[in-house]
Amino acid sequence: MTAGRPDLARAGLRFDVGAPAPGAATITLDRSQRRNAMTPGMWHGLAAIGQALPPEVRVVVVQGAGPSFSAGIDLRLFTPEGIPGESLVGAGDPGFEDWIASVQAGFTWLRDPAIVSVAAVRGHAIGAGFQLALSCDLRVLADDAQLCMKEPALGLVPDLTGTKDFTDLVGVARALELCLTARTVSAAEAYELRLAELVVPGAELDGAVGDLVAALLAVEPAVARATKELIMQAPRNTLEQQARAERRIQAQLQRFRMRSQTEPIPAGEDQPGDAT
Ligand code: CAA
Image (cartoon, rainbow, N blue to C red; front, side, top):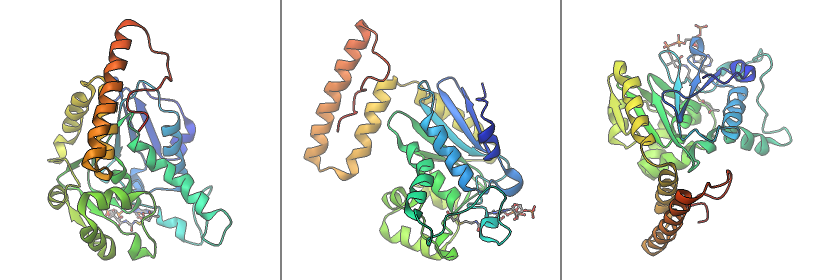
């Protein structure tokens, strides 16, 4: 089904619950005539989707309509004419950092342990578009994908949560090089840099994403959530801390599974892995 949200359509977004399979949902950046260029309205729309995600959704696919994933921020926002109904808050305006936090909210929720997010990237993923792909847990790239962190070339730092996962994945030196040179990374290089889990011919992208989603959904929801919670804390934990987390989350998970076999668990009750 397609959730009827006219505000999302105006923001250039489509949100399809049950696609590509029951238990999943697909977010489509849907402004292909502008290569899915992004606006504050689109970022707030992404945040709204995250805030009201139906509880049955366990996998979220993010894709772009047409030949590009996203050409990044809509450059008309920087022109005197601007875009009717859309505006950037400037550094000299009150609440600038709070406003950035409000648009970052469109990106952060994709890491929530309750879901696995998958970016399906064909063509360009530039600036904010690249940061959106980086916000997803997994990336499947068409072989024509081109990734570019363009912000510093435009006088900006990447501030849509793209520097954390990027640096964790490729390391400090490579992240610095790619940001400061705004060099375009091909799909093949992205795979080598661990920025992609899979690269496939463009015609096979949807099929490959569908297969991945099916595999992710085959795992019990509570097990998937607890595993993601555990894996996500591994990079910042010592071995001792991680071993302790494994014991704690395993105990929570198995108690939860035993309980759920004998009684219905009320909606909203803590899931295993919640307390870290
Ligand atoms: N903003 C507004 N319009 C854009 C756009 C953008 N970022 N990117 C593309 N478009 C528009 C083009 O102006 C063009 O419109 P018209 O048909 O009206 O002329 C249409 O989309 C198609 O674009 P192209 O003809 O250029 O398509 P292409 O396939 O030849 O090239 C492209 C695609 C490489 C993405 C190229 O359009 C491009 O370089 N776009 C600009 C990319 C960019 O610099 N983005 C800013 C990133 S930084 C950022 O995002 C900052 C942040 O986080 C705050």
